[in-house]
Image (cartoon, rainbow, N blue to C red; front, side):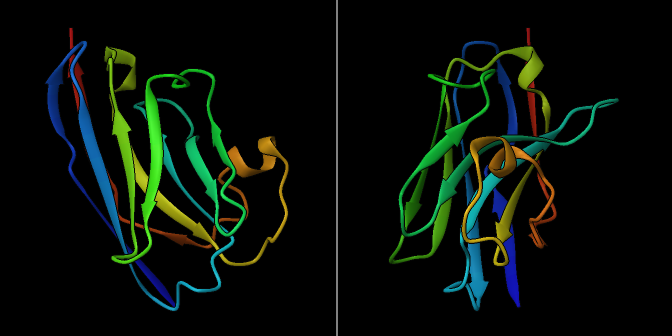
Length: 129
């Protein structure tokens, strides 16, 4: 079992920054992929930033590339998402997720929420114009 708890959401004006954290506990050694997803009102959940654990590869949605950065603190088992130059369209509920079943994925597969078998409860990010 893996438990994921997100924190760091909040409200910010457009152009501002926020940093999200995801504390992972339990049997996290078997995680192949860790990442961040978001769901905006009226839209489906989408992948934002993903890390292939062990390999170190990262994948970003085109909409956030060059603005968001995913990182992992191995010692504390915390996954982070640094979000800069935020836009109103980044407003969403952000989720942390882990995949312990799929050792290899393509970029498209990694950014899809299919196959991620552990999820946090989410943290709200609101960006005002």
